[in-house]
Image (cartoon, rainbow over all chains, first blue to last red; front, side, top):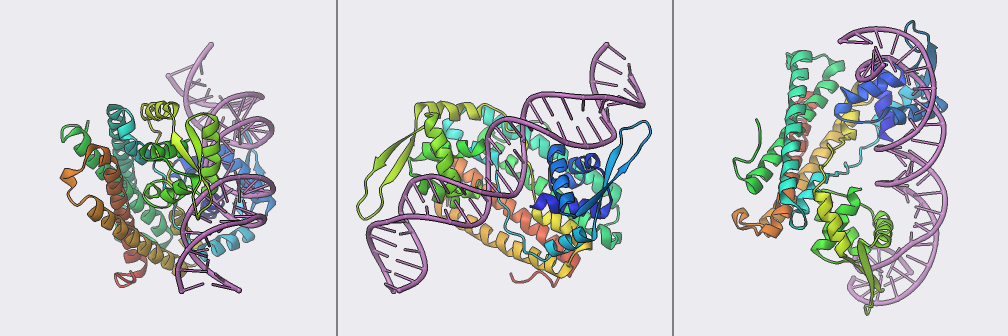
Length: 184
Length: 184
DNA sequence: ACGTACATGTAATAGGTTACATGATTCA
DNA sequence: TGAATCATGTAACCTATTACATGTACGT
């Protein structure tokens, strides 16, 4: 149940409404874990029942009321316990790999277009990560202890995107020739 | 429903029983898509109902009977259609990233051990991929068209493992110092 | 006698997606 | 007037994991 723990981390950093959490999962935290607002609301309700978080209504003017969730002491204990259990190896699932493997049974030109699109996507994400790194951590040697995790996760994102681009490049070199990579 | 398509690819390459498919998903195809035997049996039943695969009983001596599944013409059409639909961007979920982000709220030494274990795992997988590449494709320029997909997927695995190792190295450099990487 | 490989499944539960539903405010 | 942002949720469905269940054959 890693979504639960991702939410606990996010709330330990700062209390938030379900809506705000959903947006964080779209942005910074979403660099390594995605979740939809429907799912977040459901998990948040379960976590409140388990007393890992508590909730207070906040009235706002000009905006709908919101429920601000905060991590409880029990939530902090749960999060600390979680860091003490070993992580099981990640299950990898690459739909692009399924498609590459389907090459002899399908339409190569469409598959190659798909790889080009994926390559563009990796490029855009990489650019976004690099901008974030530049803006928030211009001097990596001066990062404070409580921010080093966020920085390392960003680094992980950068390395993963670079590897993704290299893979697309190898695929395109092989299937479309060196001229077939598209833009950039 | 990419599992369905991964099974179609696997059966298009060679007919197999559910048990054999489960083993393929543990080995070569499992390099990019994992599935348990329970799930494979269930999906196979659904696919048979949809006439994407058909099944005949094979008697074996000294072993239990098996059901050999083969892709049908409708299955081949479905697979070809699949290669014509664009792939949606992959949802990334890294539990290790959640843990790194949980650093200020947990037990750093256990988290660092976890990273070391992950690094070892990446190393072992990389070694396995490299051996496979050496054994099956000693000369990359001489790979036949119908095997180029499998080779490219292996290459993707190698690049991903290398990126994973680099990430672990950066984390350990930062959190445990240059001497803290463990073996290898 | 015990473990492993072969072989197939069911049942319960958990996790996740898609579609639907509502309603206020702000900005073009 | 219409779209976007803020804000919360329900319902149906699909996908995936874990645990349970059964039985043969072969090697040590």
